[in-house]
Image (tube, rainbow, N blue to C red; front, side, top):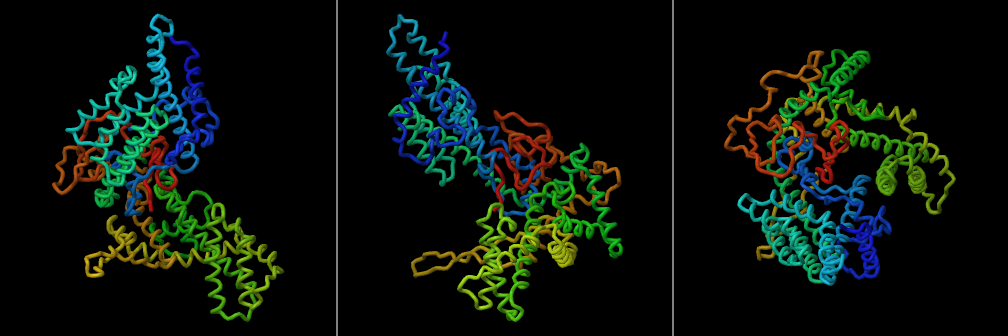
Length: 623
């Protein structure tokens, strides 16, 4: 039997030891001091040991979105890849959720460090205690075993992740060398060779990781060896922490490699995949097709009332989306645009910024002397736009309203310079300019509304023409037109010694309005190809299509020899695979998810996503 307060007793010694040695650690790559993190200030080791998560921050479950089957079945990723040729995964530690995860991770590593101290403390007392006492060697061995709450799980996690990164012929060696039960027995008996284990881990990781991960692996090896040789718990934990970071990085590298090589296939299969996937979502009530159809019908009726004869559904969708972007304060578009809400929100912000920039220029023109030469005014307005851009970068939320005082100063300075009255500074007009800006930049103001409507009418004709021109292109052709591949830099030999100099890539300058038209056209054309027959042109019942074109891909269909075979842990139902792509199941310790996987770690609904998909601690990143 173990005394109730023995853990608190041991960890009280640890806290004193920790405080005594604080500041002696010169390795600043990872700060393990719990007082450096919000939420864990002055947290005793006993508290962290009791309350911290028993599982490490990185596990096979948190990385499951990187499996090829999840990538193939991830609707958000498969849609986003049409708009970004360099879509890739990265670790996500941003925002409130990221901060919460970081604090949870710090508490875990603090608890693991305390656990190592308990091993050392119990091991020392076991060797020193007389065998005939109640608190003899057997007692301290029981204390050591009872304190093994996190390390065994961490070893199993490292084993399971590593097995997904090595070929089949190395699986048995990984399983044998990272046998958590055996390693914990060695630790209990005081015969575990952590130096040898770190050397073996470094050798295996370097054999399979990208060269850019070598420095992290070397650091992991050095930390583990220093911790083992000097009985330094903090260094041991640093080493294990870097081990998991290296494994996570390797998984991300593999997933990004697979995305690069599958990109063209996934883009080409976009419409086929989304028709199948969204027909299923309509059938189970996840997409309100009736609301989307009513939205389009209302827009058609509105266009007819405004004098446009026989508007096509595609024209109505284009017109309706432009009005949504400019005049709808809520989430733009009907529910069928759920995979584009982030892009549409970005386009909406871009339109509002364009209107706000123009309003600022108009106020400068209104407040300056009428005899200013037009060319001088245009030059000052261009300078004002650059100044406003710089101001917004330093303004919280990049808000024009919050930046009104600074924008007013910039406008007044430009006016004084045009009128040759600066220097000195004359702030007489400043209150009036601020008042005009505050009134005009309010989205509900008459000036904003008028300019927004003028902008909408001007852009709408360009959008109509662009959509009509590109509507028949397939997904790959749309990407080639609207997301062109940057030209490779030409290499030149200099100096006669074979040195190669690659000049910077050519920067293509797009007209802002043309760039907006390109972006919205890409969204609208791809959206129409997916949703036209499903919703906008369908019968009122919005039944799930039953033709063979909408049926699940047969798992027995022979794959083309030119199509890749995706090695995956599972392929739920094999419903959504690209035509000709097969999935070979491989053994894994990761439990299979529900038949229709939701493409996010937190099990939120896809309809709730905003912007790039957040995948637990990972997200596809668009540069």
